[in-house]
Length: 71
Image (tube, rainbow, N blue to C red; front, side):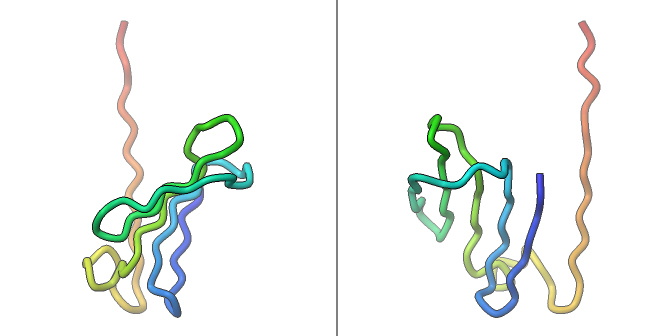
């Protein structure tokens, strides 16, 4: 997964796969989910990211946490 922030457009993008999007749905509150040819999500865009306090000017901190699945 890749995470990008475009300050000029104030968009936080989560790129789940490198496949090109062929369709997208805009959810309420400015969330856009793009889908690949197979119908699986390829990216999620969060509009107005700084207004939502998802990013602060000049600083982006990302924490990735994984869980261990036990059988």
